Length: 202
Image (cartoon, rainbow, N blue to C red; front, side, top):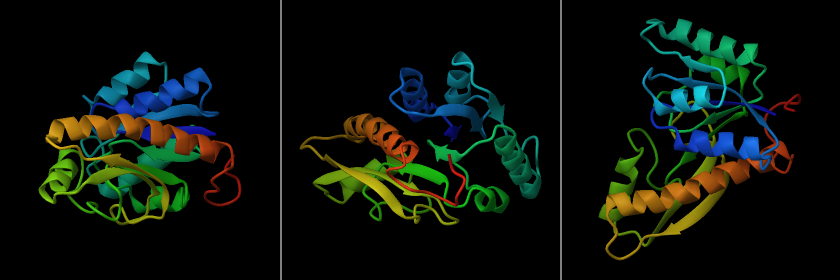
């Protein structure tokens, strides 16, 4: 299974997936890493691992349709089977979503449908969890559709909220589990334990 990783910033989830593939814990290959941020750590991580890395954004493609086309064509050029969003801060365009319908997954740092939707990402999620007085939070891996965080859920994992937690301590605890759940869910997809998309997904 050829995976394309999409990330906008540091890329720690991308690194966890790259490492799992290299170690044989995930029967897949990272075919490409794409970022909308030319300075993202994810692109540097990809280059360090010898993986094709692409900065594709509105700077080079001011028209959304042209950017969408460039992303889709890059994926097809690398014979990508599955897109894994790993902290990607943009919606995918309709061409890409049509071509990879049912084969785009994302990881979100809460137990969806709680604390999801437009504007809910990163530290904002953890801030909202603490403000709501939740006793547990978690991680969700889900399929991606045209709306934020509304695709079918593939896997979830609960993480306790501890007395005295700050946004930073909660974020760190969630992120450790996030790496584990994302890799394990991708392993299950690669092994055929979770069936995705149209026929032809290897």
